[in-house]
Amino acid sequence: MHYAVQAETDIILQITVPSFADQRVISEEVLLSDSLYNSSVLGEERFGERRLLHIDKDFECHYRARVELDRALLDIAPLPAVAPHRLPNDALRYLMPSRYCQSDELQSFVEAEFGDSGGGERIVRIRDWIFENFRYSSEASNGQTTAVDTFVHRQGVCRDFAHVLIALARASSIPARFVSAYAPFVTPQDFHAVAEVYLDNTWHLVDATGMAASNQIARIGVGLDAAEVSFLSSFGPIMFQNQSVQVTVED
Image 1 (tube, rainbow, N blue to C red):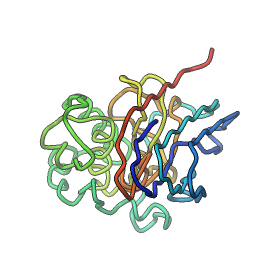
Image 2 (cartoon, helix red, strand yellow):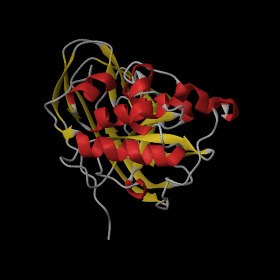
Image 3 (cartoon, rainbow, N blue to C red):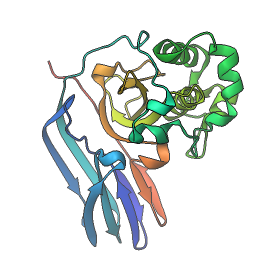
Image 4 (cartoon, rainbow, N blue to C red):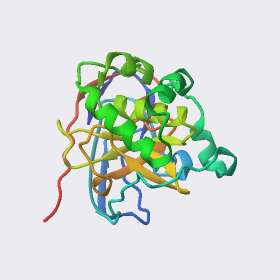
């Protein structure tokens, strides 16, 4: 990625894949242009890494990694939801409405459309409903688009599809969080966004765009919505120049 910078500014970068039981980083290389300050902190939920940078000239970043995934495909439909009073503390916050996922505004729709289902079956129905009724379009949204906006207009990109799924899951009293990720069959190639839902006492990846199966997703970070896991956040004027993401599967 390349950004033009005309004055000193701070940025937060979150693009590297962390190692966990279901994804292991075999090798990686991060090349950053010179900066006045460079440090790192843990991401939300201590998941992944945020790089804190203070820069005063054009910024470039190149990231390359080999990641091994060990995550079985699982049919989540039979999985039970966990009652809110039995949720662990780290899952409770993902029941709440957030900046881009206004779940409280979608509760009536959820009950009318999916009220005869629950748990994993409801999540599968929500995922399929989004896939069947929404159009994937890079021209349909921007960084301010919310789940309700996307719900109304029925179009957006992976970020928007994830926000709608998360909002509808939370409206169903099922914890759901936003996941920034890489996946090999995203079209056009770019960073990807999916959801994770909390069923049967663990988190499960769900992609409403249909472009990535759970065993093809390398997670970068997690949060309430896109605001908490932005690939790059700036605190001053910078101008996007170009960006290229390529994700492939080794033979």
